[in-house]
Amino acid sequence: MSENDPIELTPSFPERLEREATGLVFRDMPSRPKLILGIAAIALVLLGRRAFETYFATQFDHSHATVFVAGLLVLTAYEFLERRLRYRHVKQIQTEARARVQPIRFRFTPRRFIVDMTNARTEHGWSTVDEIAVLRGGTGLRVGAWTYPISDTDLPKGLSPEKFRTRIDGWRCAS
Image 1: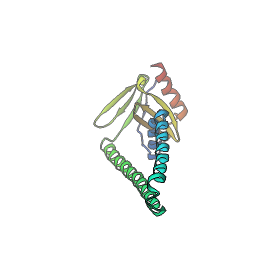
Image 2 (image 1 turned 180 degrees about the horizontal axis):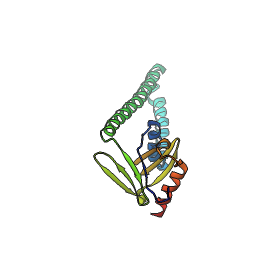
Image 3 (image 1 turned 90 degrees about the vertical axis):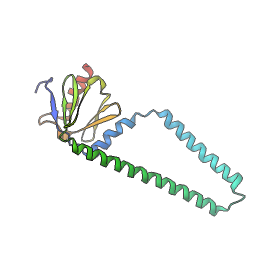
Image 4 (image 1 turned 180 degrees about the vertical axis):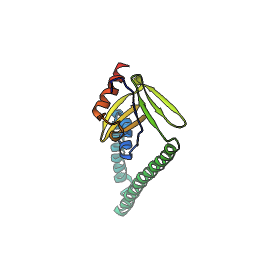
């Protein structure tokens, strides 16, 4: 196989690999907003404590504070569970949509990365690929907010994951 021969494969999209590839989008989230949100959360906790000590402590005993804190914990648990259910719902929609466009084929050439489906074809020039990442058991390509996970087991016979990443990264750097 020559360095310029196209690479074609049918991705299997293992869930663990998809989840890790999706993390590529959030990993580079700027730290300033996270820092501002953290400081704001700490300030709200301190202000809330101070407000409770100043205004509510004279009107309520500690049992009211316990009920208030328990209410906050229930609200936090609700938010967590609601987010998990929403994630599962979106994941189910994506899985059903992917099943309707099978088979999906990836084709890598020196000029572009192509995703072929039964109802669509997407071509990405290598200059649009933001990142080629090593994942546990695969490779992740990030194009803006989209991620494409490629399992090591989906690669053509005789092509190691390292050689695959080296080749496509070379094509990306040359574009």
